[in-house]
Image (tube, rainbow, N blue to C red; front, side, top):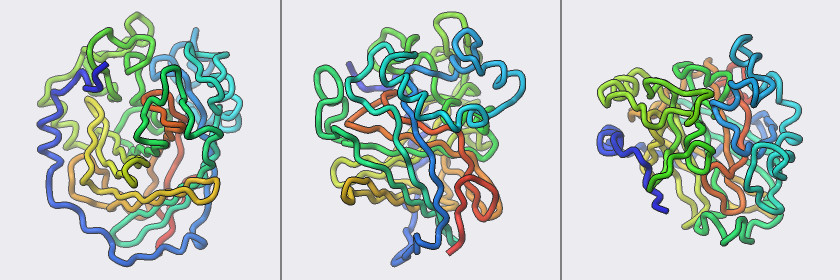
Length: 329
């Protein structure tokens, strides 16, 4: 199967918008991570849980709390992510193709700091039990990358992202999901606001074929109605990707974020430098004293697509409230 997204309408325009002067990285900056508060969370395997699934009462027991009471996913599930991941990774719930031996959860340690120009983050998590072994029938899904680590950022412009985190971009018609269209290529992440309508219950669920006109998407990008997305890939000595999610996922390798990562003993340690204000479309402007909703994903054991581990919604505060507290250095 081709790995081309079904939607290329954003491609040329988005790439052209995002081209610009490469950001200048802080030279010789040393972060004292011992002075940065540590946050801990547990990423879990989500199976085929989607934005549509979490809002349907016959699928998800917490649908009413989310849709009617305005509760956050983390408000109900923060203490049970490991148990949820175990059920889904084993195939007990919403996973029709369980991968033998796949761990249900991954503990993640996070530290953050910032200065006048950059946000700095440090991530640490244990190496998987069989990271060099085939992870699915037929072999490794992504043979070039043992792991990938991604982060999404919302500043309040995306509806429900402050409550659902990554689920605002995960839909029932994406690759390897139940309503995925039977076509060459695949549907990538997208935001509900980029569609004229989203089907929550009626099949096919989602809205991949209901894209708004390009002019409307361009206006939304300028208005900040997107999720900032950065990602580290372990292959080729480490690859940094930067982009956003709106009508589809857009990623490039010369953006406002730069990663370094390696194994230290039985753990992966990954650090990120991200411009507070890169001046590039698709990058959020991060400001001291403000709090942002963030979500994390780890593709373990050469996984791709939905076969990852994810966090619930979390808050990142730059000298502000949040489970993750970035302190100035």
